[in-house]
Image (tube, rainbow, N blue to C red; front, side):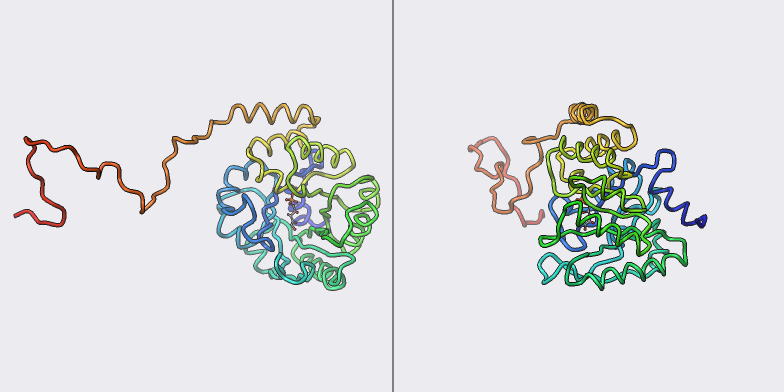
Length: 303
Ligand code: 5RP
């Protein structure tokens, strides 16, 4: 393996333990301002130092991530559809290799939609992306996208992961499922697991644990971290499983301890937003005081 490629992959999958904790914040590329990711800058800032790598789009990277960070960037380079459009599987490569290099990407990520109307287009694009990326020692992460009409069982995910690996993807991102070991065994490259939609924290920790036990190198988790009421405590608990070899009970105990130590959020003591229609309380007529001198009425200049 070329030095550059090896070096980039080692920033994403840590060679000491062959594990990876990737934070996914790329959802806006088709979902727009999805719940609790409305302000990516605010979401990313406290979490950045707790993940091994960050998966995102170039727009969010440029606008929301300080260029001084040492955290590797896994750049999503596919897109073209939105949640309100006709077909989410109609994606193309939207970012050039030159721009990815300008952004100092550590890997390029794209989705393939196996079994969909645009299967051919997305799989062929993966092959082309691997060709281009290979010229610069850039690894490619293939996301096996699932949709309403696409399955999420071991049979389907094994097929999708294997197709991605055969096209030359260096890492494959997929979903956890029953018989997940089968998916891992039939995929010749490392598998990383997406978190999926928000579930209770303990369940997300269980998913992380199961995925690693089943052979995944780690998780590329988004919603189950930043949609949690306590994102920093949650990512630390996930990290305790991925890199600290903790079990679910230990990680959940840690999560609860960290939550209890978080500074309490101000509730009704917070400053209320400005309401132009609300009358000022001190504009109320004061009781007449015969000894008080007359002040200048507003808008009158003193002579
Ligand atoms: C969207 C993605 C996301 O990065 C992926 O789904 C991981 O995020 P989450 O844990 O929220 O599922 O690739 O297409």
